[in-house]
Amino acid sequence: METRNTLKEYDVIVVGTGPGGASVAKELALNNKKVLILERGDFRPVTGTLLNTLPRLGIPGKGVLFTNRMVAMVRAITTGGSSVYYYGTAFDPPENILKKYGITIKDEISEIQKEVPVNPLPDEWIGPMSRRIMESACDLGLNWRKLNKFIYNDRLQERGNGSWGFMSAPNYQSKWNARMFIDTALASGADIVNYAKVTKVILEGNRAAGVEYRHNHKKKRAFAPVVVIAAGGIGTPVILRASGIKDAGYDFFFDPLIAVMGTAGDITVRPEIPMSTGIVFPEEGYVMTDMWVPPVLYMANAASALKLHRLFSHRKTLQIMIKARDSLGGRLTDSGGVRKKIADADYGKLKHGRERAEKILKNAGAKDIYKGWVFAAHPGGTVKIGDLVDSSLQTEYKNLYVCDCSVIPEEWGLPPTYTLLALGKRLAKMLSA
Image (tube, rainbow, N blue to C red; front, side, top):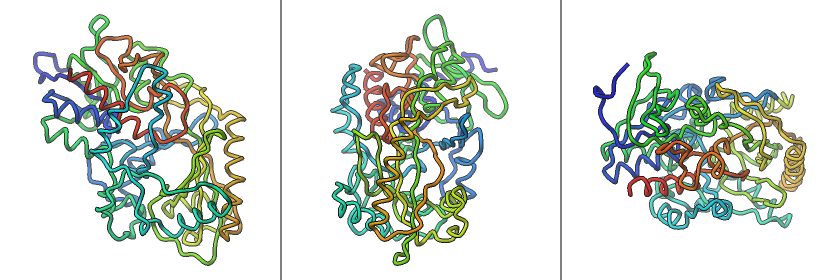
């Protein structure tokens, strides 16, 4: 194992390259800090094919985690994290929640809007499925509208025929993702080590001094006076537990969701940008959006509902996603296993949303309506602000910080990318100062 005097010296180590970690790494590198980025996943090009995607998203125990109640939770293990495969929807950060914990990010939000696209799609890029659903919902009196997206509208090109649609070339480059910030960090002098699985933080007294990680089947160490853990809502608490913070990984949220589908014979659905339209019901505790998915995922959902006669009806299917703001609860195992039961009240939110979705689909002319599996996304709240990190995102150990979805202090129920970008920029300002 390397000793400190044989290693390159760094100012900051950033563990993880999702929106939070990438934002911190980019800002610090631009401020002439020597940054080492450690990423568990690969840095290979994204092509959007099934073979290119499955190793990052589809390996059980790695990209796919099953709870003890057999709810599948999906994350991407690759440079850029899940932002590589997310649908690029920009929900406003929960400023009122964060203010209760001494965090103001108004300035950072304004700065982000100048750096990345935050805007709805042009009308011509609202696909036939999304448009049909939006028109039906509005006809029923709902304020269903276009949603803000992290998409460079001027880069959009004709839809490809790749199996993963919007996530395949050429339109992959039209969507902002955290790899773009990592590229900026590297161009500004940062270093990255891929396939580096961090196991614990090296401590000197009550202060972080570096990290231990596995790389090429060897145990290695890297040292820096500041360590930022941004390994995600599951990965971060596992690292912190192994580093002595035993209370990490309890009472968290993971945003359960379902899809409701129906077949309309008078429509032909092409690959389109998902979650381009929708509506949030804060009082009811859920969000609804259109949801185009690749054929293989559609077929899996149809099979799970025993709708075998609909396996090949993908191009005639309208699909709505309902995602609930679930209650805090559950625990993680030391190895990152997820132990959590969806509360009855949260199932009630999904049921209420499903009934509303069925009305929208029926009004849109769909028939044979059914729902698919319950999935989960965006695990967070495992290292909460006000509990295990303070308002500067620092843990009980000096110079050990956390910047990912795990710090969000309350259940929120919406995609966290915008929030994590702002928190990352805020943390980088403090570390640069």
